[in-house]
Amino acid sequence: MTERITTPFGAQSTADEVIAGVDLTGRRAIVTGGASGLGRETARVLASAGADVTIAARNLDAATQAVQEIGNPNVHAARLDLADLASVAGFVESWTGPLHILVDNAGVMASPEQRTPEGRELQFATNHLGHFALTVGLHDALAAAGDARVVVLSSVGHVNGPVRFDDLDFVKEPYDPWLAYAQSKTANILFAVEAAKRWAGDGITVNALNPGRIWETNLGRHIDAPPPTFDPSGQTGVSEKNIAQGAATSVLLAASPLVKGVTGTYFEDCQEAEPFTPGVRRGVADYALDPGNARRLWDLSVKLTGVGG
Image (cartoon, rainbow, N blue to C red; front, side, top):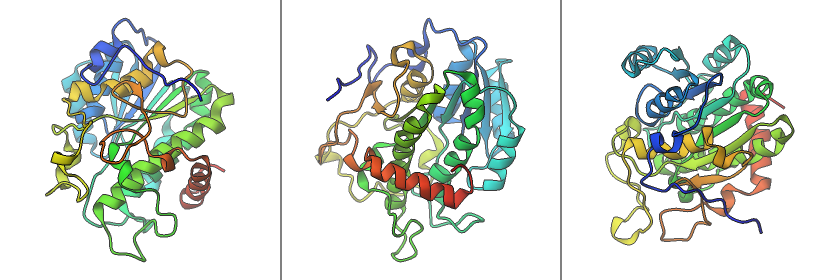
């Protein structure tokens, strides 16, 4: 058994603290969903260390406003709708040159039942399939960097359920927004596991993370009530954070020399997560790291997106 990866940072560390002393001059980064919340903070902090950062967001006006408010000439805006595979393909086609950092940050949580133009359930399509098509589509750009890092935002919500391989789109059973969210977040981790394995020879590291519970972002816009499995009186280990703290683990995995070469892992609070224990609202579920599930999801994702092989 390998030793668990730890760093001097923790749940209360901020993204600025994590990036201190790191020079990203000459490195190019993309942050999806960077128009607000954790994505915007991640973009700001990476740019503050010298990276050239593209904020990729569905709402181009909001992304442009974020760029203006960040006020760093190294930050740019581009349109990307992860729920629309044609939009993803267009973004990939427009990218030229190497890509050193890709932060798959955008997401939707517990939304009402909706379908994409391809007929896919929205949360799985946005949180996983869109990011799968984007990341695999940008593989050559990542490989060209020589030491690229891919960071995939998951959630502790993944412990509420695995990928429903026999009913991804809730056709056989009634739609449940929290189970849909859980499977999409499990898929994020499984993607990191399989991509890390496939791309090790390209110098690309791929890791997933739980940013913690942050109430200041737009992610919770669809929430009227907490998930049915959540009982604050009976749950321990929850990390409640502000945006600066919530972005810290993303920035750590994207830029810190402390995790250079680390790949295929799931982090929380700037540390490699421990196994999930029922009743404790943290850790990583076994099914989210299962290599068989990871291969199966990859093959299915290729089929559903038409990207990769």
